Amino acid sequence: MKRLSDLRNDLLTMAGLTERSFYRAINGLLQRDDTLCTKAIADDEEVDQLEKQIDKAGLEFCFAISRSRPIYGKWFRQSNFRPTSSRVADEATNIAECRAQVERTSAIS
Image (tube, rainbow, N blue to C red; front, top):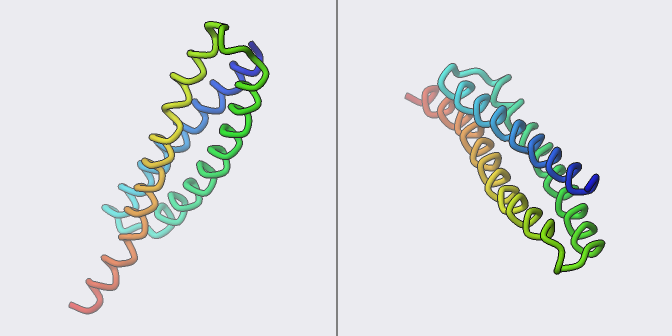
Protein backbone atom coordinates (compact mmCIF):
# COMPACT_ATOMS: atom_id res chain seq x y z
CA MET A 1 0.00 0.00 0.00
CA LYS A 2 2.89 2.37 0.66
CA ARG A 3 3.97 2.19 -2.98
CA LEU A 4 0.49 3.08 -4.16
CA SER A 5 0.28 5.90 -1.62
CA ASP A 6 3.66 7.24 -2.79
CA LEU A 7 2.51 7.10 -6.42
CA ARG A 8 -0.69 8.92 -5.53
CA ASN A 9 1.29 11.63 -3.73
CA ASP A 10 3.61 12.01 -6.72
CA LEU A 11 0.62 12.37 -9.04
CA LEU A 12 -0.91 15.01 -6.79
CA THR A 13 2.41 16.86 -6.69
CA MET A 14 2.55 16.71 -10.48
CA ALA A 15 -1.00 18.10 -10.68
CA GLY A 16 -0.07 21.00 -8.41
CA LEU A 17 3.05 21.80 -10.42
CA THR A 18 1.05 21.66 -13.64
CA GLU A 19 -1.58 24.03 -12.28
CA ARG A 20 1.10 26.43 -11.08
CA SER A 21 2.90 26.28 -14.43
CA PHE A 22 -0.27 27.02 -16.36
CA TYR A 23 -1.15 29.92 -14.04
CA ARG A 24 2.33 31.40 -14.39
CA ALA A 25 2.31 31.04 -18.18
CA ILE A 26 -1.09 32.69 -18.66
CA ASN A 27 -0.35 35.51 -16.24
CA GLY A 28 3.14 35.98 -17.62
CA LEU A 29 1.72 36.38 -21.11
CA LEU A 30 -1.13 38.69 -20.09
CA GLN A 31 1.03 40.82 -17.79
CA ARG A 32 4.06 40.73 -20.07
CA ASP A 33 6.10 39.35 -17.18
CA ASP A 34 9.20 37.50 -18.35
CA THR A 35 9.93 36.24 -14.84
CA LEU A 36 6.61 34.39 -14.63
CA CYS A 37 7.16 32.94 -18.10
CA THR A 38 10.63 31.73 -17.17
CA LYS A 39 9.23 30.12 -14.02
CA ALA A 40 6.51 28.39 -16.07
CA ILE A 41 9.15 26.89 -18.33
CA ALA A 42 11.16 25.74 -15.30
CA ASP A 43 8.01 24.19 -13.82
CA ASP A 44 7.58 22.13 -16.99
CA GLU A 45 11.08 20.72 -16.56
CA GLU A 46 10.16 19.71 -13.02
CA VAL A 47 6.94 18.09 -14.27
CA ASP A 48 8.92 16.16 -16.89
CA GLN A 49 11.32 14.84 -14.23
CA LEU A 50 8.43 13.85 -11.98
CA GLU A 51 6.76 12.10 -14.92
CA LYS A 52 9.85 9.93 -15.39
CA GLN A 53 9.95 9.17 -11.68
CA ILE A 54 6.26 8.18 -11.70
CA ASP A 55 6.74 5.97 -14.75
CA LYS A 56 9.62 4.14 -13.09
CA ALA A 57 7.80 3.71 -9.78
CA GLY A 58 4.66 2.60 -11.60
CA LEU A 59 6.48 -0.12 -13.48
CA GLU A 60 8.12 -1.30 -10.28
CA PHE A 61 4.72 -1.34 -8.60
CA CYS A 62 3.13 -3.33 -11.42
CA PHE A 63 5.89 -5.94 -11.31
CA ALA A 64 5.58 -6.22 -7.55
CA ILE A 65 1.92 -7.19 -7.51
CA SER A 66 -0.18 -9.75 -9.23
CA ARG A 67 -2.79 -8.87 -11.87
CA SER A 68 -5.41 -10.58 -9.78
CA ARG A 69 -5.23 -8.03 -6.98
CA PRO A 70 -7.92 -5.31 -7.13
CA ILE A 71 -5.45 -2.60 -6.19
CA TYR A 72 -3.84 -3.08 -9.64
CA GLY A 73 -6.74 -1.35 -11.41
CA LYS A 74 -6.55 1.61 -9.04
CA TRP A 75 -2.97 2.30 -10.13
CA PHE A 76 -3.95 2.33 -13.79
CA ARG A 77 -6.85 4.73 -13.16
CA GLN A 78 -4.44 7.10 -11.41
CA SER A 79 -1.68 6.66 -13.97
CA ASN A 80 -3.98 7.81 -16.80
CA PHE A 81 -3.81 11.27 -15.26
CA ARG A 82 -0.03 11.53 -15.66
CA PRO A 83 0.19 11.97 -19.46
CA THR A 84 -2.62 14.53 -19.40
CA SER A 85 -0.91 16.56 -16.72
CA SER A 86 2.36 16.45 -18.60
CA ARG A 87 0.68 17.70 -21.80
CA VAL A 88 -0.91 20.61 -19.91
CA ALA A 89 2.50 21.55 -18.50
CA ASP A 90 3.95 21.38 -22.03
CA GLU A 91 1.22 23.73 -23.25
CA ALA A 92 2.00 26.11 -20.39
CA THR A 93 5.58 26.21 -21.68
CA ASN A 94 4.31 26.97 -25.18
CA ILE A 95 2.22 29.84 -23.80
CA ALA A 96 5.18 31.17 -21.83
CA GLU A 97 7.38 31.02 -24.91
CA CYS A 98 4.75 33.02 -26.81
CA ARG A 99 5.59 35.92 -24.49
CA ALA A 100 8.92 36.43 -26.25
CA GLN A 101 7.24 36.22 -29.65
CA VAL A 102 4.66 38.82 -28.64
CA GLU A 103 7.44 41.12 -27.45
CA ARG A 104 9.38 40.75 -30.71
CA THR A 105 6.24 41.44 -32.73
CA SER A 106 5.46 44.53 -30.65
CA ALA A 107 8.99 45.81 -31.13
CA ILE A 108 8.72 45.46 -34.91
CA SER A 109 5.41 47.32 -35.15
